[in-house]
Image (cartoon, rainbow, N blue to C red):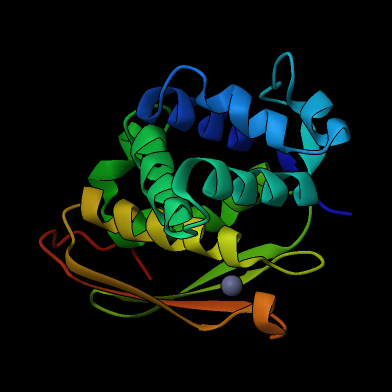
Length: 193
Ligand SMILES: [Zn+2]
């Protein structure tokens, strides 16, 4: 079984606390099975590893409890996670431009997931392909979070008209997920090839 870093779960806790009513997080936890809720309470440890399945069940529970089952909440969560990361710990990366940050995601992915991979291929100005492998596979909610995250990262770097589409998805049986990210670049900085 693969695992994710607690900081990914803390992002969700912060998102719910900021965007919803004060009892929202407790309602989400109450909707989970006891074993899952126990892992997330009384607190989540940023540096601990948690089961990837738990992380997916938490996202699904958030959609069900807070959005009437609408999975779009996950895309909003991805947007929020990107803003949180790039206005905090990774703020300094913004000056390097979208392409450089997307390339760094490959390294960051290994900090947040104990298995799988993320590779970024630069396809030309304002266009990258992101290939992700999750073990054993991704989920619909996980990929919606990822879409929102990638789009916001590029927008925060000054990218305009950002489009993120997922061609392959391992949640649908493909061997890996493949995201195509396109944008109009307002920043001319490109890292060396
Ligand atoms: Zn996918």
